Image (cartoon, rainbow, N blue to C red):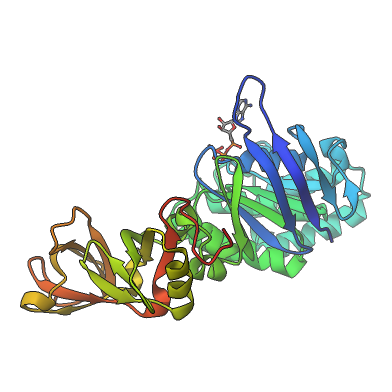
Amino acid sequence: MTVVRFEAVTKRYPGVDMPAVADLNLVCGDGEMLALLGPSGCGKSSTLKMAAGLEELSEGEIRFDDEPVSRLDPGARNIAMVFEDYSLYPRMTVRENIAFPLAARGVDRETAKGRVDDALALLGLTGMADRPVTGLSGGAMQRISIGRALVRDPRLILFDEPLSHLDGDQRVQLRTEIKRLQKTRGVTSILVTHDQTEATAMADRIAVMRHGVLQQVDTPEAMYERPANVFVANFIGEPPMNMLAGRPAGAGAVHVEAFGRAFAVSPLRASIANARGQDLIIGMRPEHLAIARAEGATADAVVSYRESRGDADSLVLEPRTGADVDILVEIAGPSDIRPGDLVSVSIAPERVHLFDRVSERNVEQRP
Ligand SMILES: Nc1ncnc2c1ncn2[C@@H]1O[C@H](COP(=O)(O)OP(=O)(O)OP(=O)(O)O)[C@@H](O)[C@H]1O
């Protein structure tokens, strides 16, 4: 049972000007699964390695509960790691791989056997316990590596892109399983991933990073509903949010340049945007836009592309103002909308996100 605290943590690599991690303040709660999410190079692996003791901090401190750990060797931190490439011992059996950390710590045979049997049962591996690990599926190998992590009863498990070598079905299955195991055992966990679907599905909270700087920490739902800035709004949600230039347009409305007209927005957001009076980036998620066939002046756009996925149709719209911007729309499928159709566009006021065009911050954030 451990609370992990990153306190003003900075990581600089020799010869590199930009810090890989800059002044990170972040707490992973007891029993929580926290995802570090961001594109390649954003500093998530450096953060994980500092927690593990595989990289030194340049500044700041990491605490497990109240204990500073930045000067402790990796072996003294009681951390388990699950890597993307499983890191199993190929010549050993499933059981021997899981038992390895216990043998290495001198746990007596009887106790070790009990704990390994428990882990095998928990992971559904009992039937293959005495098989060599070579030749097993990627999903089975990753379950073994999770078993090896759990059997040690660590203070913290660090998952480093644990699903990236698995194919579609195994990924979905294992991400559910990891979440179940993590919750059953209540072990504090940090997950590094560049995949927002994975982070959203597995984590209690997500910390989005960019260029070493933490952008937002929140539950997946809160991050989807109230992204702190344009970067987070683009990163969370698939397909990404439409980002359209606009400006405040009086009480309860904003003007969207691409459509050449006003849209109603939530009164709070509109009043903040109006009070500041700045140019806006107006965010509309593809799945929140609704369209209807329209004629003449009521038409906002023409459908230029349609991809049918059975239960959903993805559309690309070209605004009739001639604005050089593609609008993505996701609607329930199969629909009878076809390329060339003229449509009007609507969206519920509370689904419209407003960002300052200069700072790219959500207008609801304090300036
Ligand atoms: N050993 C190193 N020496 C110098 N620079 C490094 C080193 N390791 C990482 N970096 C740099 O630090 C920054 C952050 O890298 P880091 O690996 O932490 O990011 P990441 O988000 O995990 O990316 P990836 O998913 O590609 O590993 C990058 O600019 C990277 O080039």
